[in-house]
Length: 239
Image (cartoon, rainbow, N blue to C red; front, side, top):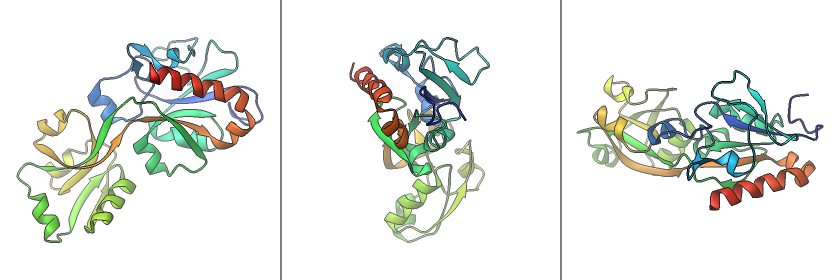
């Protein structure tokens, strides 16, 4: 069975792939929400919870890393895959951005804790000079590019705005510049990337941060092991 399978006594935590140990700059965390255990007042969140990998994830080529706790190991995956690993029991708990969880749907997951890291905003952004308010008011059909298609679809549906939704996986700011889209839905932190590409954020959709997610079945079977870890993260966040 895969590490963290319900038949094993050990606990497997899954974390996203990039920059997770040292924390990350605001712009990068906005672009890859939830891409790791960022620093808590200068200390990695894992260490603050008493969990220390036996190898440096930045230099090790291993994707499954043992920790100082014999019954806990860490799996490193892409941010968008974290909910899937936890949902199917390949990992017992993990860290994922709220944006990723919404797109995933959250089936089979329990999200007990807002880790208050990788904070940013989900926004609608448009080219400078584009009269977005007028276009919406007149009922124009807009072309919207986004990686977050579920979020974008639900947002514009709630506003009664008809859109053609274009799914992209990166460099979202390029879409309006190349004439592919009228607007984008993306994560924004400082807004520096938007400004550099002559785009402006015009509409706030929601605030985003990383969440601790737990496999619901694992929590029932391994509560004595998992609950202290969850409590340790809660205490680390409060410090």
